[in-house]
Length: 401
Image (tube, rainbow, N blue to C red):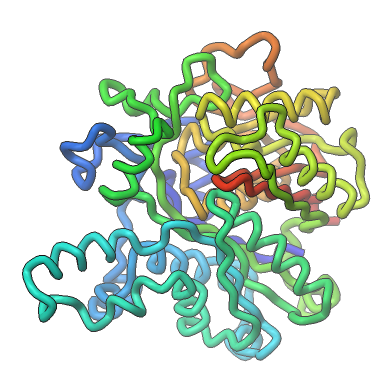
C-alpha cells in the first residue's frame, strides 16, 4: 500500500505543486548556466531549492544534489504517511532508492581541483560520490534501520527500486519501505556525453518546445533532475496504525532487451515482457488498464518501440500521458517520479496533459492526452520505465479501496 509520497521535480516541490504544474502542461526547459557553451545548453532544473535551508550549510556542502533531493522527498513522504519517529526508526523499515549517474557534479568539481594539486581535494569526496549514499543518507537522516539498498538500472532505476521494495514487503523482510529514485543530470559531463550520442534534443532556439514525446518532430530528451519517494507499507501494518491509503502497488515486472547497449528492441519485445509480467503479478489483464503513464522519452527509437508495444498489448487504447514533456528526463529518478504521478492521477481521477504534441505517425498513434487534463474513471493504471542497457520495468497501481 502507498501511504505517503514526496516529490522534488522541475515542476515544483511537493505533491500539490507538482500536480498543478503537470495540469498546466507548461514545460520547464530553459537555458541552463551550468551547461553554457555546450552543444546542448538547456535543461529542466528544480526551481527554488535551498539545500542549506533544508540540511544546514555544512551538511549540504558535503552532499551531492541527488542526495539533497532524495532526503527532501523522503521527509515529505514520511510526513504525508503520518509516520511517527518511533515507527520509522524501527529495524523493519527499509530504504530502497534508484539512481543512475549519481555524483557526476562532485566528480567534475574534484577533477578540476586535482589538476591544481591533490591537497585541494575534499575529504568528503569519497562518501559524496559512492552510489549507495543516497539511500544511506536518507537512513541517516530518518534513523531507518532496515534493509538499505540502491538500484541501478539506468533510467528504469526508480521503478526497479519500487518493485524491489514490493518484493521485500511480500517476503516479510520489511513492514515499511521508503522507495523511489533520485538523480541530477545537470552536469557538463552528462550533457556533453548524451549530446555526443544524439540522445538530447538540439532545439536550443526554443527549449520549452524541445521535449516532444510521441510527436513526429521529436529529436531527443531534455535533461532533468529530481526525486520521488513513496512510502510502501504492508497493508496489515498500515491498517493497524490508521495510515492514509493513497493507492496499492499491485504488480511489478522487469526484464532485459538483450538487444543493444542504448537502442531499444524495435518492436518493444523486452518491454512487453516486463509489462505482461507486471499485469500477471497484479492479477489483472491488459483490458483492466485504465491509464498509462508512458516512459515517453522523446527519442526517436524509444517512442516508436513504446508506441508499438502499447498499441499491440492495449488495443482498447487507454489514455496515455508522458510527464517528461513537462519536467524533462530525471534519469534514474524518472521511474519513481512517474510512478508517483500515476498514483496522483488515480487519486484525482484525471490524466495530466502531454505538452508539445502536434502530430503522431499514423501507424504509431496513441490516445495521448493533450492541452488539458482529462477526467477518467480509473481503478488501475500502468507506469513504464526503460533504460540504457535494455533494462525494462513496469508497475501496476490500483486505486485505494
